[in-house]
Length: 582
Image (tube, rainbow, N blue to C red; front, side, top):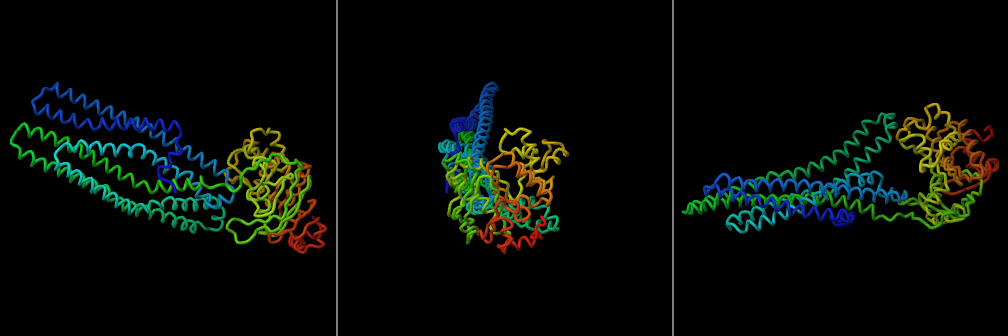
């Protein structure tokens, strides 16, 4: 847990210097504001003493100067506070983003992508607003209050007692409101996570939603999350709503008390000169009392934003305090042979009660193509994700180029691998941006060559070339075209190892065969691990691994497996390819 003021850890030298300047400007502004009632008293004295218009104008000019100077100081304070809070918020977002990029899938799954988005946006905005409040109101309010009270204490004790009573009443009121509303404010950010989750799922799954006529179901789902957030906010606002009118009531009662008691004090004095002096003091006292009360009110109301800011800061620090499970090693090269070796590898997803992979052993030699086939859920994708260290294996070792993957620098390890995920990832932007992703050094010729290998060059040329735009998640192209763009992205890197995770599933058989034929020519000399559910895709591999329930149950060539492996034969028969027609 962290203090609500722990945001200062994001301050750098410039923010500290400007914060000091801000405090100085606030003190100067408060002094100017507190001088204005003194000039009011002087003007009253001049008028009641029968002074000239020139004397009144002199005092009025000085009072106006204080007001203008206070205005300029206030503008300067607001500008400085805005810069400091925005700069700190920018640094928080940068630190969060940089840290999240180090997360493995385990850490992302632990918090959830929806919550990470909220913590990088809405939570940071809460802290930004709080910094502005803390630097301005939390410094100014107590200074105004204490300074005004000190000046009030020099006046009549009856007025001073009335003012202190009003301050106490206001503090009790705000404390009660804060005590009742704080638990509700703490829940706001968690309800925002729920809104983000439902909205994101709706946007990502809109095709399925419309295909199943499930708009009303999603509407009810969103309404539930929206209702929970709205109801929580309404309850908090109902509690807080009494604050402003009761504050006004307390100020009005204080003003009436000062004037009523002042009237009795003035009426009880027989000296005309003393009456005028008391009247002048009453005007000044009432002004100072109002300033003191407003200062305490502002100070106490600030505490209403504490719970929400505290929750937001805790959520941000929770992200920053997570130590990524997957960290850099020191190796950068290995033996450069492009080999993969699994040695007694077992793996269990975080929070799972059973192993997804168990005692996996196999090698992919230099220039060899090894296919992995098996039923859905047998662990093929989990196996593929262990090689670039999206997760780390629970036990055993995985070696790339003769080096344990945990000993590599992550950039070096992943630079060796052309990984194509099961679900094609298309980013909003041009084809050039998508295929050449991760580097600005690829030439147009290299990008076109990669597109040609993936059998999508003709389509891109027909549509307008490398600068045509692909929408978010590739919604303006087909599933097969997305997979081929994703394949071209890996080919463009020209790695020594390729890992294809069932990335041919959306291709028709003819295109699948042509893509693999061109890949075989392009990737000659590279090692290939090919995850697939298609016999037709796997049969041309040098070796085929058959997986079942997280284990490798057999391995060999297509012909060998057809003759001895019942699981492989069943898959072949189900796809009607066992007779070798492919």
